[in-house]
Structure formats: C-alpha cells, structure tokens
Image 1 (tube, rainbow, N blue to C red):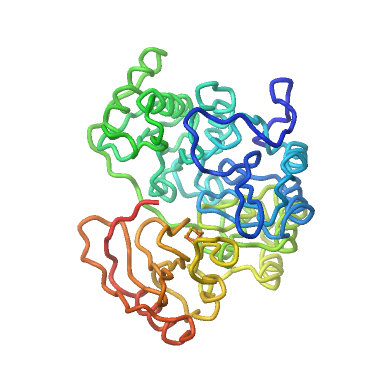
Image 2: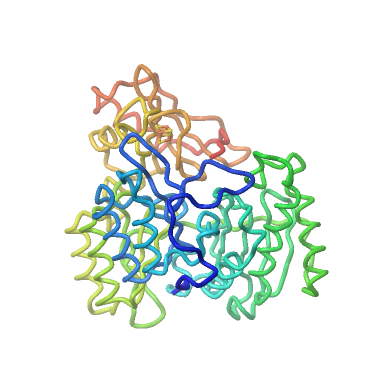
Length: 456
Ligand code: SF4
C-alpha cells in the first residue's frame, strides 16, 4: 500500500484546505470544483495503484456522496462528480480512513504516472514500483513540494516508453535489467534536449530535486505551474538539478541529447506474464465506470488477483496476479459487466470530456453523441470535446472531434514533429447526422498521422 495512515502531522479533515501561494485551478479531494452537475473531487492515485479495499472505499464515496460513477482521468486519477458542495469533510474522512490521504497538504501534488504493466509482463528494464513508493513518500515529506501546482506531473517509465511520452514535467526512465533500485535511470525534465543519468537507487530523490529546482525557477511567477510555463525552458533546470545532486553527494552524468522511448498503452485483454499469473486489462467506455463495474474489478482483484488494481493514464484498469486458470472466466465477467476487454470493441480508443450537462462551457452532449456515432473502431484514438479547451485529450496523434456552434468539426491532430499537415478536416457536422459524423470520424481515424501540436 502506498499511502500511510494519517499521523499527528496530518491535520484533521476540513472543508477548506491550505491554499498554496501559487494557486492553480486544479481540483483535489479537499478543494472541490463546482460544476454544473454538482461539486467535483479529483482523487490523486500515485501510479494508479489502489488496494482492493481502497478501490471499494472510492466506490462507497461515489455512491454515498456523489452520482455513483467513477471517472478515470488521463493521469490515472479518479474523479467523483455530482457531490454536494458541503461534503468535503465527509469525503476526506472516508478517503482518509482508506489511506488515500496520507498528507492533506500534499494531496493535489501527488501526480505520478507509472508504467501500469511494470513487473507483470516481462517487458521493460525494471519494476518501477519501488520508485513509486519512494517518490510518493519523499513528496509527502517535502515541505517545498506543497508549493507545486496540481498540474505538475511525474512519470516513472520502466523502459517500455508508455508513460515517457506523456509529456510529464519530470520523467524517470529505467535502464538496465537489474531492477529499479540497483539499475540505472535517466532523469528527463520537461522538453529539455539533455538528461541526467543517475543510479536507480537515487532516482526518486533526483526526481524530487528536479521538482525543487523547478520551484526555485518559478519563484515569483504566479502562473508558472509546469516546466513548459518557464520562460527559459527546461535547460537551466537540468543544470540546477545537477548542482543539487552534486551538493547531496549523488553522482550523475549529463547526457547531451536524448530520444525518449515510445511504447503502446496496455491493450484490453489478458496480459501474459513470466509465470502462471496473468493480468487482466480492461478499459472503461468513455472513461467512466458505474459503482457496480468498479466493485466487480475490486472483487476480482481481491478474490482472484493479488489484491491490487492499477488505473492507467489511458482510462483503463489492470488487475494483476490473476491465476491463469481463472483469467478467461474473469475477463468474461468483466466484459459482461460492460467493460472493454477486446481491441475489436467499437468503444476502444474512443474518449470524451464530460460535456453537457456537467460542464457549462460545453456546446453539446458529447458523450451521448459519441455513443451514437460509433463506427467499427480501429485506427487513431478519437476524443470528443464539448468546447475548444479539449480537457483530457490524448497525447500523440489523435482524432479531434470538437463541438462548435453549428456542429462538430473533425480533424487529425498530433504531436509528431515533421509529419504532414492534418489529413482530414470536415465542415461542421450536426449531431443530428450521426451516420455522416461516424463516417467522418472513421475516415479520420485511418488517416496518416499529422501534427498540429496541441498543449493540454
Ligand atoms: S473540453 Fe470544454 S466542454 Fe469539455 S469539459 Fe473541458 S471545458 Fe467543459
């Protein structure tokens, strides 16, 4: 279990948490965001790792205090919606009892994504779970880290390149097959050309030093919430982090030019492992799970798995440690409950923001419209947005379906430098023409990748 129970240093639940000096708008568990469908809480789940008991507690919170639905985010966190505005104390109490709030003052800064299949499928250079536990502990013990914004992101990649490409502010990439603690790591900061190579055992501290170097550089800049917001970019942070490492007696080597690995997200289905255990990989349609679906996952983890679930930054859930003999049956159970268990599902690769009626900015009920315009699936991921903000859109190349005043506009967007321009841009198509919309989306999903860079 990552999270420690509250201690004397963890103040009691309260509705109004301390506000950081450089306030950003990101909601948390203690600072709720008021949406059109009620208050919204974002529960940080470092590495997406939850015990079955913690997962059950989240379902209880969603049912007792919210709309009974659990929404996965593009960082492997959980959002609860439809909350009463004054439920903060009750929510904090529930999550605290489950060990999901080890430090109230750090609850919004525990933003860590990690390779979800690390240690499960024989791929990757190391199991990053030791880094995850260590970095979360260091963050929660750091007074300086309370000043990080709720947007600042750490990524722990086991070498397969899945989370290294998510554009984190601080990325650790494992290298060498001796394990995260004894192997090596590359520390990459923002969009810097270079990186620092450190020992695996030093990697979590190095990541924290990088965050502290960022805070120093961001001092006095009220809207510098992420590395890319710094006017001088990431280069000076690499040098500043090297100085901090040197002062702490931690050896590091500068690597002048790095090319980050890229790898695929876990596909839905059964993930083979090196032993008799399997992992079940499923995706939530449009990233939302009913409490019934969520509890089934927690129950499978408890009875057939190793008692853990891992939420992925691609709005999926991995249940590790399922006995090979039970894996097929349990996957069928999850499919029968409405989860995506097969890449052939038309829901596979389809995402959407909350849209109407949950968001006042939305020009359409994007989730309903996405459901009526499903094609045969396949190709690039597609993301439906209710307005031009495109909250939670995927990284890399993707199909953008954005609501405008007179309908949806479909285009291929991406972040692959040097690729051709968008291959498909439609005239706005009204949702009253779902077949036309579905055809436009299907065409765009099979178009060549392009590259209009987008920022989140
Ligand atoms: S993309 Fe627009 S409509 Fe969708 S959740 Fe964000 S602000 Fe709301």
